[in-house]
Amino acid sequence: LIPMVNQLQEAFAPLGIPPIDLPQIAVVGSQSSGKSSVLESLVGYDFLPRGTGICTRRPLVLQLLNENVDQDYAQFAHITRRIYSFDDVKKTIQAETDRVAGNTKGVSSEPIILRVHSKNVVNLTLVDLPGLTKVPVGDQPHNISDVIRSMVLDIISRPNCIILAVTPANGDLANSDGLQIAREVDPQGQRTIGVLTKLDLMDQGTDAREILEGKVYPLYHGYVAVVNRSQKDIDTSKSMKSALMAEKDFFSTNAAYSHLAQRQGTMYLSKKLNSILEDHIRACMPDISHRVKVMLRDAQSELVQYGDDDTQTEQQQRAIVLNAITRFCQNFHDYMNGNCRHKDQSILYGPARLRHIFTVEFRQHVNTLESRDALSDEDIHTVRRNAVGVHADLFVPNAAFETLVKQLILQLEEPAAACVRTVSEELKQLLRDVLEISKEIGRFEELRERVWRECMQLLSERTRATGEFVQNIINMEVAYINTDNPEFEKIRTGVYRLMAAHQSMPPKETSDGVASVSTPSKPTPSKSSGEDMREGPAGVLVRDQWKPHYIRVSSSSKQLEVFVSKQDSAPIRQVPLEGCSFKVVDGDDGKTNCIEISLPRRSFFATAETVSLGFPGSDEARTWVNSLNKARDSGGGW
Figure 1 (tube, rainbow, N blue to C red):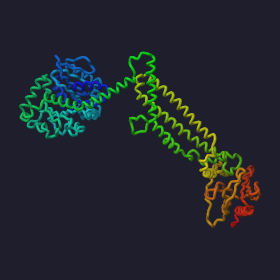
Figure 2: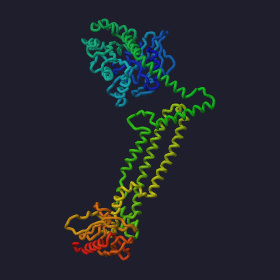
Figure 3: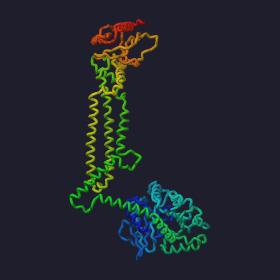
Figure 4: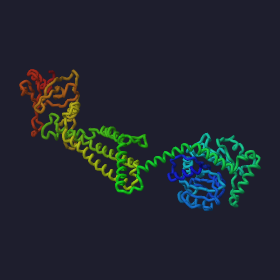
């Protein structure tokens, strides 16, 4: 079982993060906790780099294979040859670490895979992780502790990972870095094995018996104590065989551990780890087998889509390319119909995003446009005066209204152009994603690049054509202002009132002698009984047509006020009566009696102006003339 998992581990190694959570044992602990010594005791050789600071700077996947070989040897996954000298193994590990992680004590998550073939080991796979540290040394980055901690958590947080937490016995168990980080991902201790080192260095009179008996911090798999070689033993080249004999004597002769001696030591630890790992693999095997079969079936299906590598005929090659392009088009069609799911379901994507741009973003942009920002009162005054030329603007000229409306319509150009650009960028991202999932095209790099260029060229052409089409629509709206539209009828009175409120007035001299146009106020006719006034309906002659209006004559203001209807509070025209003359004449239709109001000339060159009011009877017209005369002469009373 273990060699089979080792093969899967090597196959998934180039992927960085394996697609299947494989059973493994990860060794964790602080620096100088004795991790390296434990691994060397399990292997039986001195093969790991040693020194001050961090020695293990890349994860080391150590695969022990029990084989009947004449001479023990090691093999690296990146080196095919066998290495019989474990000193060379140590040098290779150091060189590979420096190559990837640098020679300044940096770390890397890229693993080194080492296989050891020997008849003196049990089948076992261990992952030696960098030791946990708190303070950076030398040229290490200031966040080295966070980097190592993140790397360790990434591996031991996987559910199928057994945690081998190494803790020195001569320290406080409550301060054990290995047990502390293991507890974060395995709070119940169900997949944690405790290893106590340096029992021979504990203060005299103290022992670790209660820890080994599970009375301090119990773990499901319990604790195993080992006694490794000391630094003096390493310096004097004490053999592993002698070290194992000394370890056995330590447990059998020490009164505190003699009753536990059969379940302590390196040999017992290796057998226990082998048993736990095999049982764990058996428990995980159904799920692993199922996932491997699914992955294999998917890979084979994908290979079938790519076609046979032995395809030689030109017709077959065309068929493969055509099938790849067709599949790409189908994927794009599926995306546009909402049949594909984006990896991030928290955001709008594809056609939903396009609809949001049209129905929400574009509408919001248009709604933020304000007519007052584009047209000031002075602009409206100027347009009205330009529309009538040398004539007085007695009523609202259509030309002035159309000129102002065209300026407002042109405000839609920028929101419309922005909408086209946004949709184009969204389609570009959509095409990029569709191309990424189209595995058939991905097989041929040149075809992939050609399809991308063609898509971008077509998108660019369509974006340009769409922009021109939108601009033409705006130009058509500007070319003809349709005031007969039923929607315009709803606001016709309001627009007329707004335009009339900005009728041109005689220029006023400013302090610097320059004539300026002032905006007339919108006085509300007084309803107080103390003011003499008369009001009522009347017809007003506008462009040779009689229009129903409502008029009011005030003796206090000496002016005639014209309203669109009785309900209006602001007049559309104010006619000063001073200097005016009034005459009753018959209307052109023989039914209407008219009052012609002749306004005085403002200057020698000014054109004479006439305002015509229409009434149904001659008597009513004459009474209105009397009212106008009295208001002009301020005679009071009607």
